[in-house]
Length: 336
Image (tube, rainbow, N blue to C red):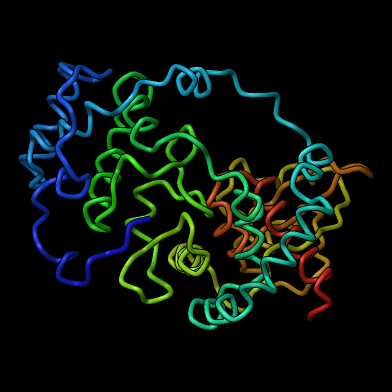
């Protein structure tokens, strides 16, 4: 990523993307040349956010509509895997070994992030491991192509992706980087932690203090940004994540929550036959769920920090994978 040109560059009005891209782009008809939707979008960005219309159009002349992106997002969802199938996808010897190496390599930065935000180092490492295998799989699509394709050619979620496209152009202006150079997933998720542009602008931090936020190739900023995200989403330092439960009686399933929100209390679950392995107060709100493990059904109570993990990805199994990978990393490192 191109470095910031100092504080003044961040604060000064941005005269247009051409100043970042270098010479003006050649005026040929690209995939979005002459598109009424793009013209409307550029008009909004010009009117409401101070972009120069012709210079912004130079970017869209370079943007490409990708059929592979439309195919990927339109593909029917795979059958929901059971926990016994999902867990081995993320908790592997290779991922644990690479996670231990990543932790050791960035130990000082992780310790500082834990101190400043209260998020354990192993949780930060686990998120980066689950999301991108520590930077191995960050995505090969240009973000401008992904968000343009989905914002202008995927009606079911066009509003969402146009908002992300707006946020992306704003972050490129703020960080003084070439918007045609940044890559991510087919949905526009970026960098080691796979932040969407709106999350980048809301939660990403310049953790190494160089005046620039780079979550693509700078692990320091990626680490600090993950910790910032969790802190802003309610992570409580020193609190547990989940508690295993034993169950008995014929009302057990009445305790299961229908979503990821912690809508039950420990006391309510106790009355329905749930018994936590840990000492939990009756008034603690929890997410109560059942997973199909290798040895049969598992019952769990997800606490406030578990809910914070689900804010990263609204999936109980995702949050459990992050949590259990973090436990495996601690065990593999031999630290308490």
